[in-house]
Length: 149
Image (cartoon, rainbow, N blue to C red; front, top):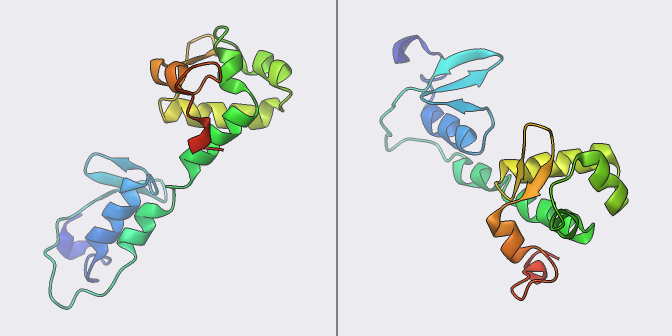
């Protein structure tokens, strides 16, 4: 689909709005395309004009910014990093050791893997990264919990 065929590109600022959403992963970006209603849509380059309306691009970029510190805080408060300091564990083993629900724990662990704060092997065991081992385990001299909790 070309720019002239795209009904949204006729509206000023469409490209910037799509770019902002893609930057925060909503909708998911794949190279020069985005996924919209399960269809790949090309992201066109559109020159900005003086009459471009005010759009929430900058604000939308902030919408997910609060989540990573909250996920790290939850893991610190429940002793996840300390438990993983003893070695890689499955979500079930971690749930027993930390007293957390496997469903909620799995969500947080996978999010932390996505942030490269934890790693996950093919057997489904979660482990610390060098960064989390150095700064998020409570016994370390440079434990950074005070920044998250």
